[in-house]
Length: 192
Image (cartoon, rainbow, N blue to C red; front, side, top):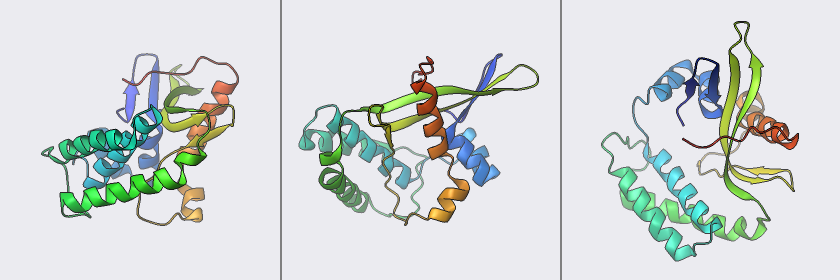
Protein backbone atom coordinates (compact mmCIF):
# COMPACT_ATOMS: atom_id res chain seq x y z
CA UNK A 1 0.00 0.00 0.00
CA UNK A 2 1.40 3.42 -0.83
CA UNK A 3 1.88 5.76 2.12
CA UNK A 4 -0.90 8.20 1.34
CA UNK A 5 -4.00 7.74 -0.81
CA UNK A 6 -5.89 10.88 -1.82
CA UNK A 7 -9.41 10.99 -3.28
CA UNK A 8 -11.73 14.01 -3.66
CA UNK A 9 -13.52 13.03 -0.43
CA UNK A 10 -10.73 11.62 1.76
CA UNK A 11 -7.06 11.27 2.59
CA UNK A 12 -5.93 7.89 3.90
CA UNK A 13 -2.58 7.49 5.63
CA UNK A 14 -1.00 4.07 6.06
CA UNK A 15 0.08 3.55 9.64
CA UNK A 16 3.62 2.70 8.49
CA UNK A 17 3.95 5.92 6.49
CA UNK A 18 2.54 7.95 9.38
CA UNK A 19 5.15 6.37 11.67
CA UNK A 20 7.89 7.30 9.19
CA UNK A 21 6.54 10.85 9.03
CA UNK A 22 6.56 11.22 12.82
CA UNK A 23 10.09 9.82 13.11
CA UNK A 24 11.71 11.50 10.12
CA UNK A 25 10.07 13.66 7.46
CA UNK A 26 12.83 12.85 4.96
CA UNK A 27 12.26 9.12 5.38
CA UNK A 28 8.53 9.64 4.84
CA UNK A 29 9.22 11.57 1.65
CA UNK A 30 11.41 8.77 0.34
CA UNK A 31 8.88 6.06 1.18
CA UNK A 32 6.00 8.12 -0.26
CA UNK A 33 7.76 8.34 -3.61
CA UNK A 34 9.32 4.86 -3.32
CA UNK A 35 12.75 6.42 -3.64
CA UNK A 36 15.78 4.33 -2.83
CA UNK A 37 14.14 0.93 -3.15
CA UNK A 38 13.93 -1.79 -0.54
CA UNK A 39 16.84 -3.02 1.52
CA UNK A 40 17.80 -6.66 1.92
CA UNK A 41 16.29 -6.44 5.43
CA UNK A 42 12.91 -5.41 3.98
CA UNK A 43 13.10 -8.32 1.54
CA UNK A 44 13.95 -10.66 4.41
CA UNK A 45 10.99 -9.46 6.48
CA UNK A 46 8.66 -9.88 3.51
CA UNK A 47 9.94 -13.42 2.90
CA UNK A 48 9.40 -14.38 6.55
CA UNK A 49 5.85 -12.99 6.34
CA UNK A 50 5.32 -14.91 3.10
CA UNK A 51 6.43 -18.13 4.84
CA UNK A 52 4.19 -17.49 7.87
CA UNK A 53 1.15 -16.72 5.72
CA UNK A 54 1.60 -19.95 3.76
CA UNK A 55 1.98 -21.96 6.97
CA UNK A 56 -1.18 -20.41 8.44
CA UNK A 57 -3.05 -21.10 5.21
CA UNK A 58 -2.18 -24.82 5.44
CA UNK A 59 1.10 -25.30 3.59
CA UNK A 60 3.60 -27.67 5.19
CA UNK A 61 6.97 -26.27 6.31
CA UNK A 62 8.90 -27.62 3.31
CA UNK A 63 6.43 -26.23 0.79
CA UNK A 64 6.22 -22.86 2.59
CA UNK A 65 10.05 -22.68 2.67
CA UNK A 66 10.28 -23.46 -1.04
CA UNK A 67 7.76 -20.73 -1.91
CA UNK A 68 9.37 -18.15 0.40
CA UNK A 69 12.86 -19.02 -0.86
CA UNK A 70 11.78 -18.27 -4.44
CA UNK A 71 10.08 -15.08 -3.26
CA UNK A 72 13.21 -13.90 -1.43
CA UNK A 73 15.61 -14.73 -4.27
CA UNK A 74 13.38 -12.89 -6.76
CA UNK A 75 13.11 -9.87 -4.43
CA UNK A 76 16.89 -9.71 -4.08
CA UNK A 77 17.32 -9.67 -7.86
CA UNK A 78 15.37 -6.42 -8.16
CA UNK A 79 17.75 -3.75 -9.48
CA UNK A 80 16.96 -1.17 -6.79
CA UNK A 81 17.50 -3.43 -3.73
CA UNK A 82 20.09 -1.88 -1.43
CA UNK A 83 22.34 -4.18 0.57
CA UNK A 84 22.87 -2.46 3.92
CA UNK A 85 23.67 -5.02 6.64
CA UNK A 86 23.99 -8.48 5.14
CA UNK A 87 26.40 -8.83 2.23
CA UNK A 88 25.54 -12.20 0.65
CA UNK A 89 22.37 -14.00 -0.38
CA UNK A 90 23.46 -17.16 1.43
CA UNK A 91 23.93 -15.29 4.73
CA UNK A 92 20.51 -13.71 4.32
CA UNK A 93 18.93 -17.09 3.56
CA UNK A 94 20.51 -18.52 6.73
CA UNK A 95 19.07 -15.64 8.75
CA UNK A 96 15.68 -16.21 7.08
CA UNK A 97 15.82 -19.88 8.12
CA UNK A 98 16.66 -18.98 11.73
CA UNK A 99 13.69 -16.55 11.85
CA UNK A 100 11.24 -19.12 10.49
CA UNK A 101 12.59 -21.90 12.73
CA UNK A 102 12.14 -19.67 15.79
CA UNK A 103 8.59 -18.86 14.66
CA UNK A 104 7.78 -22.56 14.19
CA UNK A 105 9.15 -23.44 17.62
CA UNK A 106 7.91 -20.53 19.73
CA UNK A 107 4.87 -18.97 18.00
CA UNK A 108 3.14 -21.55 15.80
CA UNK A 109 2.16 -23.82 18.75
CA UNK A 110 0.54 -20.87 20.58
CA UNK A 111 -1.69 -19.53 17.80
CA UNK A 112 -5.41 -19.99 18.35
CA UNK A 113 -8.19 -19.11 15.96
CA UNK A 114 -7.55 -16.03 13.89
CA UNK A 115 -6.90 -14.62 10.47
CA UNK A 116 -3.67 -13.64 8.72
CA UNK A 117 -3.26 -10.35 6.89
CA UNK A 118 -6.31 -8.46 8.12
CA UNK A 119 -6.49 -5.09 6.38
CA UNK A 120 -8.34 -2.16 7.93
CA UNK A 121 -9.23 1.31 6.72
CA UNK A 122 -10.92 3.38 9.42
CA UNK A 123 -12.03 7.00 9.75
CA UNK A 124 -10.13 9.27 12.11
CA UNK A 125 -11.77 12.67 11.77
CA UNK A 126 -13.12 15.19 9.29
CA UNK A 127 -11.00 18.22 8.44
CA UNK A 128 -12.41 21.76 8.41
CA UNK A 129 -12.87 21.61 4.63
CA UNK A 130 -14.97 18.41 4.92
CA UNK A 131 -12.22 16.02 3.83
CA UNK A 132 -12.32 12.78 5.79
CA UNK A 133 -8.98 11.71 7.27
CA UNK A 134 -8.47 7.95 7.55
CA UNK A 135 -5.82 5.50 8.71
CA UNK A 136 -5.17 2.13 7.13
CA UNK A 137 -2.93 -0.82 7.84
CA UNK A 138 -2.63 -4.57 7.74
CA UNK A 139 -2.44 -6.65 10.90
CA UNK A 140 -0.28 -9.74 10.41
CA UNK A 141 -2.52 -11.80 12.73
CA UNK A 142 -5.93 -10.84 14.07
CA UNK A 143 -7.97 -12.85 16.54
CA UNK A 144 -11.14 -10.91 17.38
CA UNK A 145 -12.37 -13.55 19.86
CA UNK A 146 -9.16 -13.22 21.89
CA UNK A 147 -8.87 -9.47 21.18
CA UNK A 148 -5.37 -10.24 19.96
CA UNK A 149 -3.27 -8.55 17.30
CA UNK A 150 0.18 -9.87 16.38
CA UNK A 151 2.71 -8.23 14.12
CA UNK A 152 5.60 -10.49 13.17
CA UNK A 153 9.00 -8.82 13.61
CA UNK A 154 12.37 -9.78 12.16
CA UNK A 155 14.49 -6.84 13.36
CA UNK A 156 17.78 -7.78 14.94
CA UNK A 157 17.72 -5.02 17.55
CA UNK A 158 16.31 -5.21 21.05
CA UNK A 159 12.91 -3.83 21.89
CA UNK A 160 13.18 -0.50 23.70
CA UNK A 161 10.13 0.31 25.86
CA UNK A 162 10.93 4.04 25.94
CA UNK A 163 11.24 4.37 22.17
CA UNK A 164 8.13 2.27 21.65
CA UNK A 165 6.10 4.35 24.10
CA UNK A 166 7.38 7.60 22.58
CA UNK A 167 7.21 6.86 18.84
CA UNK A 168 5.19 3.73 18.15
CA UNK A 169 2.01 4.45 16.24
CA UNK A 170 1.45 0.89 15.03
CA UNK A 171 0.05 -0.37 18.34
CA UNK A 172 -2.32 2.59 18.57
CA UNK A 173 -3.44 2.33 14.94
CA UNK A 174 -4.05 -1.41 15.15
CA UNK A 175 -5.90 -1.13 18.46
CA UNK A 176 -8.01 1.71 17.09
CA UNK A 177 -8.74 -0.35 13.95
CA UNK A 178 -9.73 -3.37 16.01
CA UNK A 179 -11.89 -1.33 18.42
CA UNK A 180 -13.62 0.51 15.58
CA UNK A 181 -14.42 -2.80 13.91
CA UNK A 182 -15.62 -4.37 17.16
CA UNK A 183 -18.49 -1.88 17.25
CA UNK A 184 -19.85 -3.28 14.02
CA UNK A 185 -18.85 -0.55 11.62
CA UNK A 186 -18.09 -1.83 8.13
CA UNK A 187 -14.57 -0.47 7.91
CA UNK A 188 -12.66 -3.44 6.54
CA UNK A 189 -11.02 -2.52 3.29
CA UNK A 190 -9.32 -4.58 0.65
CA UNK A 191 -5.64 -4.62 -0.22
CA UNK A 192 -5.05 -2.97 -3.53
